[in-house]
Image (cartoon, rainbow, N blue to C red):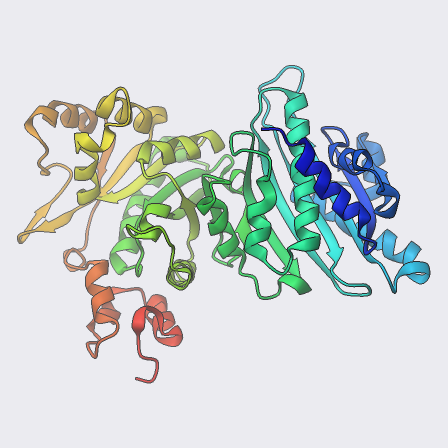
Length: 465
C-alpha cells in the first residue's frame, strides 16, 4: 500500500495550521517522522527543532541517565524535557497564539545481524489550545517488516498519523486510535499499548482504548493491571512464569479463584518454576466479549474488568480463540513455564476434532503447538449428573482416547484438587440471580466481587435494595 500521498497530505495539513509548533526528537531508525514534515513543505511553521541523540552519553546528558533506552521511562523523559524547553523558550513571544507540542520516539529497528526484537515507544505531548495544560498520547509499537528500511518507513507513517490525530481528533479518542495505521497494514505495524492522559483525555478509560486496539486488529492482545493502568505485555510477561485462566468472568466466582489457587499450588511445585516470579492472568477473548454478535457492550466489559481487578488479577484481552495461538503469544514473550487453567468442559472442547479443522494437521497439529515447551493444562473437575468428573475419568471420543492417554501420561494434564461445595456453582446461574430478590448468589462470588456488584449496580443489581 502506497503511504506517500496521504501521509504527505497529513503532514502538510499540520504544517499549514498556524496553531501547532514544537519539537520532533527521535532515537533509533533515523528521523523518519521529521522527514515527512520537511518533504511536505511549510515545515518552518511547525518544527521549532528536530534532534536525534543517538549516542548514549549525549542522550544521558540531554535527558538524564536511563537503565533502558528503548523504554516508556526514556520516552517520557524526552517528552517532558522537549515540551518544557518549548514553553520556557517560546511562550513569552508566541504563547498566546501557539499550541506547543513535543513528539518523541525511541526505537530499535532491524539490526545488521537480525534476530532482534524490533519495537519502540512513541508519543506526543501537546497543548490543544494556547496556554492550555498539556495532554499526551503514548504508544508502544512493534515493527513487523523484514527489512530495516521498510520498518523505518512504517515508523514514519505511524508518527505522522499520531501527530495528525492528536491535533485534529483528540476530541474523538476512538477515531484517533482508528487512524493510527492509515496507509499501513497490521502486517507491518502492531500497536499493543496506547495510553491517553492529560486534560483533553480526562474522561477516557484507557482499558477501553486497550480493548479498541484488539477490536481493530491493531494488536492480537492488550493488557491492564489491577490498578486499571494499561500495561505493555512484553515487559510484563518477560522472564515470568505465567498461569492464565480463560473465562467469561461474568461475574468471577469463588470457583474461578479456587481454580487459580489450586493451579498455583501445583505450578509452584514444578522445578521449572523455581525462582521465577509467577504472574496470574485472567484472560477475556474478543469472541467471549462479543457474545456471538459484532458489538462489545462497553459497560459489561468494564464491569468484568473492575471485578477482576477487585480480585487482584492482571487482565489480558486477546483475539486468540484457539488455545494454541494464546500459547504462542505468551511463549514468544517469556522463557518461563506457562500453565493454562481450565475446567473439564474446556478440556472436552479441546478434543472436538471439528474445532481444529482450520489447521492442516488438525487436532494433532493443534495439540503439538499448544503443548510444546512443556506447557501444561491444569484441569479442575466438573459435576455431571451428580458425579464428579476429573481429568482421569473424563470421556472423549474412542478414536481420540489413545491421544488423550498419551498426553495425560506425559504430564500435559494436571488434575486439580477441588472443594465439593464449589462444583455446582456456575457463572450463568449467579448472573441470573443478581437482578432478583434472591441473595444466595453473594456466597458464590468472592466477597470483594459481591461488594462491588452491589455498590455499582453491575449486571442489573438494584442498588436501592
